[in-house]
Image 1 (spheres, rainbow, N blue to C red):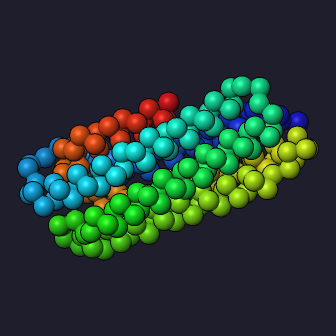
Image 2 (cartoon, rainbow, N blue to C red):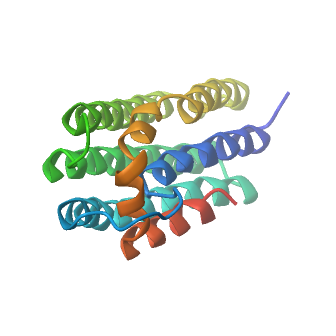
Length: 198
């Protein structure tokens, strides 16, 4: 029988993929020509809002990874994972709200790109909230059942981390990406997210 620790390691590995989503919003594209002031101010507003959320997601990742290296009880694992998923759900919701309140970027199809990205971020937030509910419902009295339950969550997490940041990528193509790379806040959000994948 597989104990909870190896399974929670799978969870941590699946989770590190989730940080990629934040990287998508952190404007990691190459730098280019100067973009206009309007787009620059849009990028700054989004980047400043993303930065604390990227840190929150990184902290949630770290918490789950730490729980795998200790000799944690199922109860501790459940509690940590539950809190981490809640934090991630809140963070993606906040990023969605930031992109929403920033308005449409001043590019072709900016409004459509923005709306698609907001929908995607809200969907990701809802997925993490659903995972929290799943973790909260795990049976911690039966180690085998608990490990099986965690396996199911790791699978869902895997799917979540490999799916759905297409709209974010589309949003930050071209001039939007160039404007974001110039923002100090985006650079640090990107660094926070990539260190979370270690």
